[in-house]
Length: 337
Ligand code: TRP
Image (cartoon, rainbow, N blue to C red; front, side, top):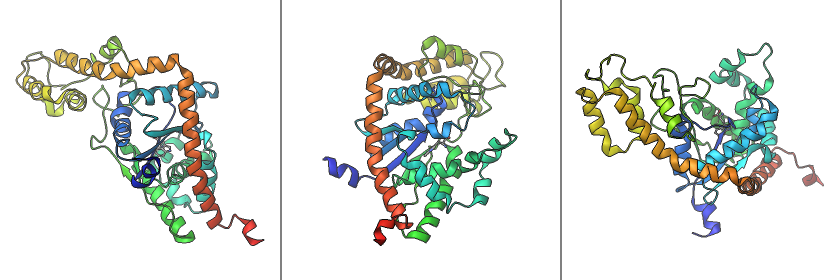
């Protein structure tokens, strides 16, 4: 396939991730694994959304390092700059301008109904308008590439619905231009943490970094909660209620799964041994990630070059879309000369 076919024949994907610094198992299973797979079939744009991140409490002094670490982790899990465009959101200033244009059609009522907004606004005495606006910037991130599909975790479904609404409203007023992108949500659904209860998340400490070494992996996995009714090692277990078994099915070699299931059910393998197998599966999967991350950490120039080149490619598309949107909205006074 040559350069020109590349862009035209494939559907386009955009996704974004906040620069939290560390990618954990939940991020990987919830979205990043999809990002990696989708590179084979789609023209992919992947963005580290630092302008969304400045709404959090993080120290600005740490943000550059968190952004770089996120880039390293993404490249480590297999986001491949030869097959996608990886860039930092704030490098492509067109997003915020399109977000303003979308602010003129996005309904306040819909924004106020977003679950994430309702949850997060509780944490403030005085809610910043950026929190309400967050999904408008997200819509701009997506629509500025006229993306057809957006691989995201389950928690982003509502924001994607709003993106579609914004596209529809804008198109109704200014003419068909933006596609209504589909959310691509992995079937795994909500991934529970190693505590077997809450959603897997870094802040709850119930997960494991994809860059963890064998000892760290085991340190996390050994205390993972299994079937609570299984007390003694030879008690028969219930794999269908055991979160570790669910995680096995996502990360362990599929040919091992029938034995793991049967030995649990008949009490012939204890939970600790079962978790050892799981820890081994993780360590095996993570080893190449760690190796790539180590290389990149030692060669930060390579990461910089990838992000610079990505921003440039992204900017070319973003500028074209923004110019068209501006012009359809009458922001082109020269055309009246
Ligand atoms: N809101 C997303 C999250 O918290 C991050 C995000 C920002 C995003 N812009 C995006 C995701 C565009 C997909 C597409 O996970």
